[in-house]
Length: 327
Image 1 (tube, rainbow, N blue to C red):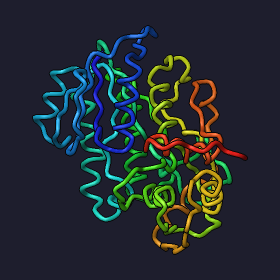
Image 2: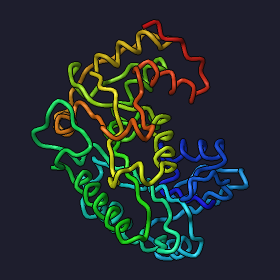
Image 3: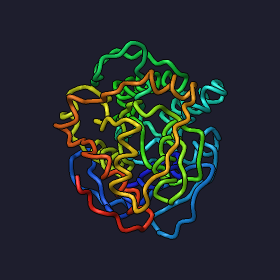
C-alpha cells in the first residue's frame, strides 16, 4: 500500500507517521489487511527520516509539479493534514483559502481514480460550528462557522462528499476539537496556546493561560486523534451509513481543570497565571463546549477518559516517566 501524508511535518503528521510505521499495515477497500510499502511525506519542512519506507518531498502542496508527482505515484491512501490554522487564516484569508480549499480541489484531481478510488482521510474541525450553540453539539448540528478557517473546513467537507459521490475518492472526515499537547516551539495557534499551559508546567516553567479559569472547551490528545484517523480509514464503508464526516468525541475541561490535573500528574506544582486574551476568548467562546458523536461508538472512534491521561501521554512522548493518576 502507498500512503500519502500532506502536512507531514506538523504535530499530527509526525505522530501519524510514527504510528503507521509501527503498525505496518492498514485495511484496503476489501477489508483485508495490506502491508504499507511506502509512505510519501509532503510538507515545506520535514524532519530527517531513515526508514526505507519513507519518501520525503519537501515542497509546497500548491506546486503543480508536486501534484504531478503525486498523480504519477498513485497513492492508495491519503491523509490530507496540510492546512492554514485559525489565527493565521484570520490574518490572511486569501492565502489560507489557497491552501485550505484550492489545494484540496487540486489534490482530489491528482489522486482521484474512478477504477480504484483511494481512501482520503481528512481532519476537519470543531470550527465548522458556531453561533448560538446547545450544550452538546453532535455530528449533524447545523454548521455556522464564525472564522475563515471554519468556513474553509465546511467547504472542504462538501467537496470531499461530492468527490466521493462521483466515485473519485472514498473520503472520511473527522472533526477535531483542541488537540494536545504540541511539543513546541510555541506557535500562535489556538490549540498551542492552550497546550503551553501543560508544556511549560511539565518543564517546570511558569505558564500563562490566555483564557479565564472557568473557560471550558473540548480537548483530545494527539495519540487518540491518530488512532481514530487510522480507525476511520479502516472502517467498512457500510458502517459510515452514508455520512462522510463525524465529530471526534471529546473530553470537556475548564482551564482550572487543566491546572488541577497538572497538580496531580506533573512532578513540579504548576505556576500558572491567567491573562485572558479577548481575541482568543472570542474564538473559543464560539466553539461547542460539549463535542459528541452518535456514530463514533459503532466505528470505534473514542475520546480520552481524563485529562490526566493527556498529560501522561505527553510525558511519554518526551521520554519522561509519567506518574500514575490518583484520581
